[in-house]
Amino acid sequence: MENNLDWLYKFFTYSSIQAKFISTFVAIIIFIIIRRLVVRIIYRNVEDSLVRYKWQKTITYIVFVLGIITIGRVWFKGIESIATYLGLLSAGIAIALRDPITNITAWMFILSRAPFTVGDRIEIGENAGDVIDINFFNFTVMEIGKWIDGESTTGRLIHIPNGKVFTENLANYGKGFKYIWNELPVIITFESDWRKAKKILQDISLNHTIHISKVAAKKFEEVSRLFMMHKPNFNPEVYTMVEESGVKLTVRYLCNPRKRRASSQAIWENVLIAFSKESNIDFAYPTIRYYDVFENEKTNKS
Image (cartoon, rainbow, N blue to C red; front, top):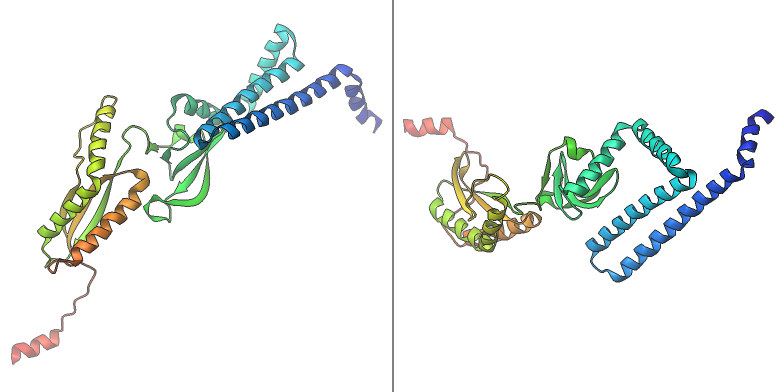
C-alpha cells in the first residue's frame, strides 16, 4: 500500500508542479468569468438575437484559444518547451478518433466557406431544418417536415456532426436563388369546363405571385453570373394532364421557402371560392361505378 502511495507523495512534494496546477485552475476560472462578463455586457447592449449569438460564439472561441495558450505557457517555458508542447498537442490530436478530427476540420470549413450560417434553412441528407447553432463538433437545426405538412417546424432539435458536410448532399434554401417552385394539383371532373378552370387558376396564382416574380428575376440575374443556369419562366404556369378520375390541372409558382404552406393555403382558399361560383366546374374524387349485367340483359330483351 505504501509503495502505491509513494508516487502520489513525491508528485505533490514538488512545489513547482503544485504551482502549475494552481495556476492552471486559476487561469481557467478567470477566463470563464471574463467570458461570462463579456457575454452579459453584449446581451445588455445588443437587441438583435442573431448579432448577439455571433458575438457570443466569437468571444467563446477567443477565450478558448487564449486559455490554451496561457495554460501552455504555464507548463512549458522557452522556445524548446513550446515546440515540445505543440508537438505533444499535435500528437494527441492525431491519436484521437478520426470523427472528432473530421468534425473540427468541417467546422473550420463551415466558418471559412460559409455553406450555411445560423438562421439558414438547409437540407442535409435526410434531415432538414433551420440552423440555430454551430459548434466545434456539430451543428443544430430546428427540424422541419417529416410528419408535418408544408415544411413546418416539428419542435425537435437535430444535432448533426459537422463532418456530414463532406459526405452528404447539402441544400441551402437561403443561398443564391432564394426562392423555390411549388406545385398544387387540382383535379376536376371530365364534365367540367377545364379551360375556364385553367384560366381561373392562372389568374389566382398570378395575383399571389406577381410581386415575387419580379424580385426573383432580378435575383436570378445575379446568381447566373456565378453559375451556368438556364433562365426559367418566373410567372406561374398551369399544366394540363388527364388522369383516371378526371382532368388534372397543376399550378406551378414561385414562393418563399418559409412561406410555402401559407402560400398554398391562400391559393387554395381562393380556388375554392372561385370554383363554388361556377356551376360547370366540379372537383373530381375517387368514385366506383357498378354495372348491373342482369338488369341490362332484361332491358335488351324487352
